[in-house]
Image (cartoon, rainbow, N blue to C red; front, side, top):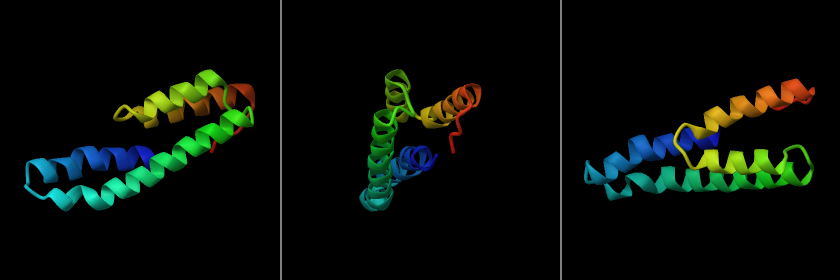
Length: 91
């Protein structure tokens, strides 16, 4: 969820400030935070796939969803529903 929020802050706040507000440094901090969270997100997906907590399809879907605004929120709900049906716990 944090990665998704950081993506939206970058797109909806920092980028308009940079390009419309003439503040080129507005993306520096949000960009670094988003980059770190995105990297962590990818590592978590890879670890979950490696430990068989996520299937290859679920892992690929999570990755693709992370590239689309609001995608992380949709995939989080979908993975939680999938885990509930299989008896696993996704936090």
